[in-house]
Each structure stands twice: as C-alpha cells, then as structure tokens.
Image (cartoon, rainbow, N blue to C red):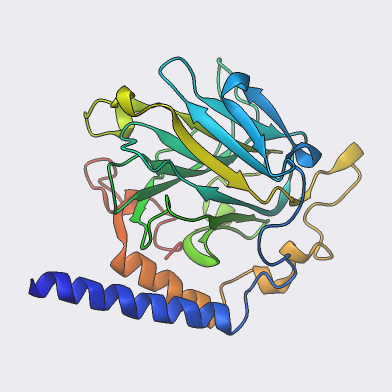
Length: 298
C-alpha cells in the first residue's frame, strides 16, 4: 500500500513538473498548436492493407485496423533529410498483446546487404496500463539500440503527440513535448549517425515473436484499431538535390534545436529516472563493453 501511494505521489509530481514545461512555453513554438486540419492525402499515401484503412473527419484522421489476415500502413510521398516529424496517436483499447503501433522514419531497405537508416517509435500492445513505448535507432542497417519506457498516461483514452527531431546535431524523441530520448551525432568519435533520406511511416502490425514476451495474441479481440491525426510535415526534402537540408535557416537546425534547454533537460532526466525500464546501454549481456555513444547521450 505504501509503495502504491509513493508511486502515485511520484507520478503526480512528474505531471506537475511536465505541465510547468508546457506552461512556460514549448520549444516547438513555431508549430501549430493542437491537431491541424491538414488532409492525410496532402503528405501521405496508403501503402498496404488498404481494406483496413479508414479516412475520418474530412480526411484529417486515419484509422488503421488489424485482423488475423492483415495489418495496414501508410507513408509520406517524400523522403526527408532533416526536420521535426510529428503525429498524434490513439492506441487500441482492447487487449492488444502482440500488436504494435509504429510511427517512424526509414530510408529504403534492401533484402541484400541492407544499409538503411531508421528512427522508431514502437508502442507495444498490452492488456492494460502501464503501456510500453520502445524507441530504436538504426544506422547502416544496424539497430539494437532499444530503449523502453512506461508511459505515464493511458494512450488508449485520448490522442497524444509524438515527435522526432532530426538534424545534423542530434535526434530527439518527444512525447507530448517532453524529451524521452536523445541520440547525439557522435561521428567525431566514430559512431555512425542517420544521414540517408527517409520517409515518414505509420503502421499497425503483429510482430508477436518479439513484442509479447511469449504471450499469444488474442485474435478474438480483433480488429485492433489505431487512430492517427496531425499530418503536417516540417521537413527538408532536398528537392532536385539543390537544397541544403543542414542550413541554419531551417528553424529545426537553428541553435535553439542543437541542445535541450534547462527545463527540457530536467524533464528528460525525470523520464529516465522514473519511467525507463530498459536501456541497451546498460545491457551487459548484449554489450559487455558500454557502446561509445552511451556516455555522451545521457
């Protein structure tokens, strides 16, 4: 009982702290507040599972469904070289163990000698709170940089905002404007950094083999449904190869976005301390020697 009360007090303190971050002004002040009215079809297209995709609210909302036959997914028309990529998501409400909702950036993949780059949000299905969010970073086809956190809210009840900032300095993953992960550009010490043009992708699928800890998906709960909103993209497409996607004239590359401010840093450390459940940097069974980027990404 005492442990539960302490956990609730810690969560309450965290929510007060994070709300103060929002109240004092978002680091993404140039973005439109709240879900915008951009039509899905302006920047995205359905790529698979067409029968399991439903456009809602004058095409400003998309519902992806998954049944035992197929999941579904979409991707941006363009490839991007830098930007701040965001979406609002509401996860399936049912027992969704084994089902994963994904929002990520990825360069083209090859079945032979794969060298793709990828930045992942992966929401692992659950039979109730707390829900696990996994992030991962792939460079030149090499991943294995998983981190997991327990979300401090129920992501099935309301839409929440998820963002990936990617510039030549760092990658930052945000949940409701709270930084939950930072991956610095450590190329100077020999650490590979994502640099290939990437599409923005959303999907609903069933990687039961690794996402459910051996528990089988309960298909009697199908169809599983995830909803997406907010389809405006802030990114550099490098059209025609003439645009400098690392220019400081692009606001996401400016000095303001080269490091976390004091309030963000505090919120980031709070997330790591209170909600992180797995960090590849600390997994000695996989990495007997700490990966070189880990000391710098904290």
